[in-house]
Length: 373
Image (cartoon, rainbow, N blue to C red; front, top):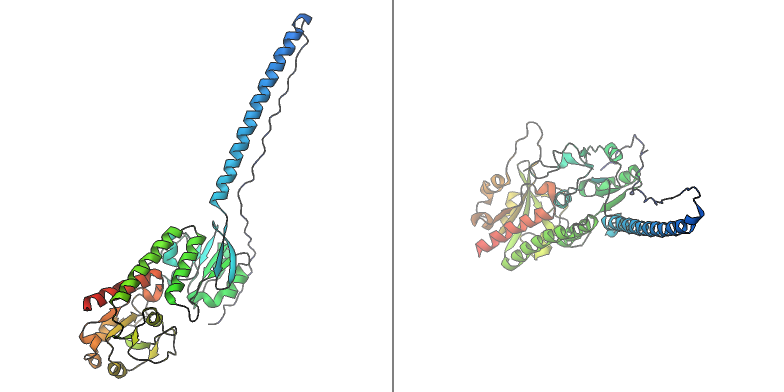
């Protein structure tokens, strides 16, 4: 992906911190006129008593003021600070109360929405209004999409935290140049790492940043619950094939980390591939004929409908994945089609691929496996 040309300069700066506490002092003075000598001793005594009383009051006031200041300082300390986060690029000290958050990673949007985070800028053009609460929020600066990004809005947002990834991953250096004072976090699935563990890593790390560990734990628990159901229901022998549909055609999704979205799931559940062929196109799947699918005769089909929530070009018609697969005469005798053992990933999956999307996918897969027992 070509790097965007930068025709502007970041002249903004960010500063933070609460107001410093003021030390309060009270100065007292008195003036008097000499009285008769007979009252001298009495006056001295009264003045002494008043002085002691005033001193006592001042001391109490000072003590109360000091206590109040300490409490205020303690409150500020509890509400702000930093947390140490390990991401793909190393260790960062991240503010737990960032003043401006920019988000480009579509795998993070719904998690941040669940945390109640309000970004100042995000790639709203990549969002689906049926899925993302941020999509139509005009108060959030739109960064466009990865093909035509509006990176000038990154400068306008003056971020101190950027959560970058997936489609915008190639813009890491650009973002670093545009917002040199910002911390940039990336949690992309690492080569050879388990997909599910990577989803959990991202979710828990973001939970730490925003102090939402409890919400993160709930998301992780929901994912693991559905995973357990799949593991318990899958017989270990039934063959499985992943497909991706787009533009009325079917593509093959290779098992393993090179297969888009579905591929890594084979390793997560030790699924038996109906066809063992290395993938070449990680993004959109590999060409495959319906005859090759029929020859492999999978017991199960896992299907990602790429176009389900995409805005199509003018004149382009949308063909649902179910129509493409189930209406194919060449696939009529395939076991998965005959036995209605086809699991379609959530319609928004291609635009999300987040922990919520995989949880829903695994739930549907578990439901289908249990129904087939």
